[in-house]
Length: 274
Image (tube, rainbow, N blue to C red; front, side, top):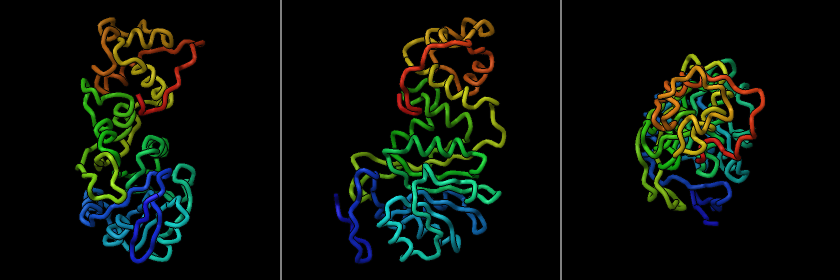
């Protein structure tokens, strides 16, 4: 573990938590500007670390809530940033509804590479509580979220996120501004959940997307025939690969399918990992 020094505090960056701390103060300020947060917003920061982004947020608003899993960093933030309502816990487990308090959260964070997908899908599952999410993550993952149809990056993650959120790729962040220095570059994206859900059965759509992309080189017909009655779908569509359809086209296709009562077990797949 690498010791990171900040204001005479030595705390080891924990590899298992995916900790990489920002050194450049201009980047957190840029993240805050791009987030569009205002003084009266309900802001939630995921994993404040040594508080680089927290400090930039406090330049805009007097207080906000942050969730930090690392006990040492939680203690550090309580002492260093007393304006923050610091919750020591795992973002994937902390209930979000009480934090929203009947409103919606503006979420910000430099999120660990190792749990990016679980964090994204936690936000997606709780999108009724989220006004926006401005997040720094691995550059490759950001590209996949914002990918266009027909590209190699376009897949499960792009369709899932773009179906339910307006996605904007904001800017790239080089690896040299972190300590410890990661092996990859980062990027910042902004997600804004759509006011109306494009599909009623969002869980069914998630399953459909995993199935449609399960073998990328196969046609939609070959990927879906075991799971759905496709009689209502034009044959020309079924001859395509999933990556050829825009998100709207995949939603339209999903709505024309009728699931079979008994289907084979889906292959082991994590959302966003193809």
